[in-house]
Length: 466
Ligand code: 5GP
Ligand code: SF4
Ligand code: MG
Image (cartoon, rainbow, N blue to C red):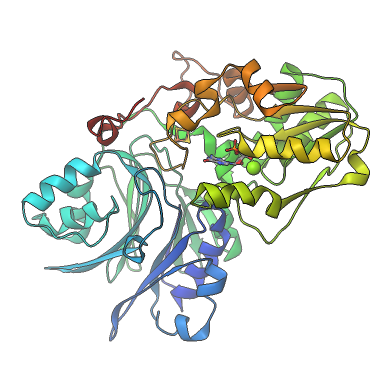
């Protein structure tokens, strides 16, 4: 998911809509905006579909007045399978003794089920099935004097990997989990401030990037006092999601002080060194494989070419919630450039193999177009473990790499060769050596290594196979 918030600007909702539009790649199922203005009070609009289709219409935007607002773009992750109900679309809003608060989050609260059970037993009435609603209820029950105090108290009970934007009538708040798994950045816009999942959302509104919110940090931003910083969590060594660098973030974002594009290009360089092959062309599977394909081509000297053309009007395949639509999605979205491919030995570079269905269909299309050889090069290690921290990987049984060796995968996909970048190669590309004794911050790499930095306790309780 993607989150965005702004304070101290005229017509906050327009800025939120633009920010969410720049974060649309993080979730395309639904979106919502909450604003506050004296008079009407808190105003909220939550809708299915794209930001551009919902939050550009004058009649909708007129219902969202005020100089403070937050927003969210959603895609459903593990636990919330099937169609989303509108009641699960964020931001959530709750009114309690000291005025209301709205909240939106990206990621996963890993002890949400346990918290929810306890809260319901003590009388809380939940409106949604979403884990972030727990925070609103914890805040309502808190004895804290101010809403930020209550937020801090609520956060101490929460485990997981998440970024939060929240607001009161006069304050914008931002939180990153103790490990900083999910991203969140701070920007300055005239006299106002913005919080966003990625820097590309600051660029679109012309805000200046100030800094990342630190892992474990909670910022409280008001027009009079500016940015105040709190640390509600125990301080831990950061473990940012490495998959943000591989796939999830936009390539024009700066993440952990690194250009996402440059990291991806460098992964391609590592791949070319680790898994060279003689061929005529290097082609990306667009768009997620593009920077790595450029790197592979530069390092190998094999010409880069657009062997697959993407229809720009389709979204990311994996965000489509059902398997049937996902299966169709490949052909709706990608087509082979036949004239280029015919008779050629082609290296195809993609970001990841998850279920393997995309790779298999792409191979069919490429061979159908007359390619002489097809070699797959993947810009991440085999995805062998599900993510419990907000990225929609399926259960282990559906992960190709959890059930097959590399050679079995090659055969199943039906290509001449298949190679993944090593975990060490990925770390090198992302600027950190892999290893327990290094001083540098390490990443979360659980979907590749099975080493989960936060115990997925809800999943363990549910008897989820790990
Ligand atoms: P597959 O066919 O292996 O499931 O899909 C792999 C391709 O689709 C990659 O290009 C990746 O960008 C995207 N993708 C498809 N499904 C998922 C998913 O569930 N999670 C992630 N992270 N990426 C996916
Ligand atoms: Fe990111 Fe993978 Fe960790 Fe999930 S498990 S947070 S996708 S690195
Ligand atoms: Mg892709």
